[in-house]
Length: 370
Ligand SMILES: Nc1ncnc2c1ncn2[C@@H]1O[C@H](COP(=O)(O)OP(=O)(O)O)[C@@H](O)[C@H]1O
Ligand SMILES: [Mg+2]
Figure 1 (cartoon, rainbow, N blue to C red):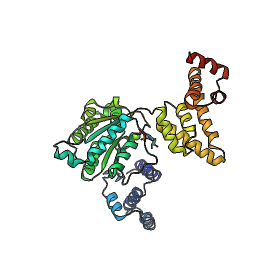
Figure 2: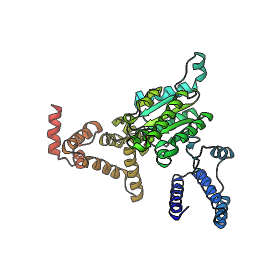
Figure 3: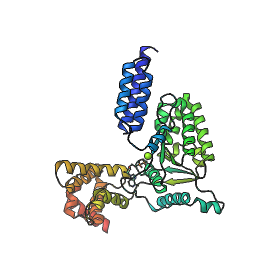
Figure 4: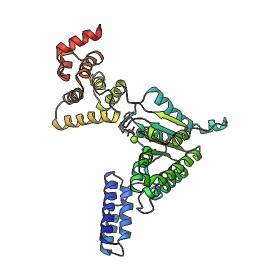
């Protein structure tokens, strides 16, 4: 190997190390360091034993079963990195909020899996493969966690955008290995960011590889065992190969949240008094945002309030102000009105927060009311 190759390889290694460390995956970190220790044994014995020492001093925390399972995770052949992320007991920081249709479908999936015997008696197969579609940040990945938690099973996630970008030449194979692993273990498998497969379409050198990958996926979806659950999520259903799309037995759509649903999440996040108007005000002001976008702004406000020792209300007002500032004139007037009508804000406050003059609000109000 010449110097340039070696340098490239070291940089790749550094990148993997950084990723695994920053994602807080101590077990994976161990695997990686052990691999490095082995690799440098011949070439640089001192470095190798230093690494081994580090490993000895920092034992993996977690139960023996956990270690065994981690050891059994499917690895990429060359990098020896795990291809799949395993959440053994998925936990949610808040309870998800979905509209009635979405909840109905999610509950049905869980119900079927819980009562496999009943279905079997009736000679009916449960839903084995489900595709989640919807814009980013509306709770698709979250829903997979929710389902796994409800079923008391581990969640194995194959993030296709990650696998595709680093190991395209072996993606098809890797995907098969992961799918086999999931079939052999009693877990819920999530193929996240499925559209990553489709996005590469435009690059002609990769078409062959992608075709193989799509073929693998199609076969696997068809042959998925009834006791397993294969979930997939995409932000861009339009990019998916229609053949892949048709294979899923159920498609669950995740729309952008309504104001009421945003307010419900804010109520959960803010832990304010029951009668605090802020969740509703924020729901009105941040209408049209995704859950994750809206939640991020509110979490930031909480942090700022905690750091500055100020009142949370003051920070939340800033969130609404910023939302108003991003709007055009007409929408800002609408927001002022909705704050008054739907969130019970006084005309004076609505004017202060949105920067629309009280005169304009009054006129707008009369016009709308007429
Ligand atoms: N329906 C929801 N209810 C409550 N919180 C949500 C919801 N959807 C998203 N969030 C918040 O946003 C974060 C990111 O959501 P995620 O599921 O990753 O979105 P997606 O996979 O649709 O892009 C979640 O971890 C959660 O904090
Ligand atoms: Mg996601």
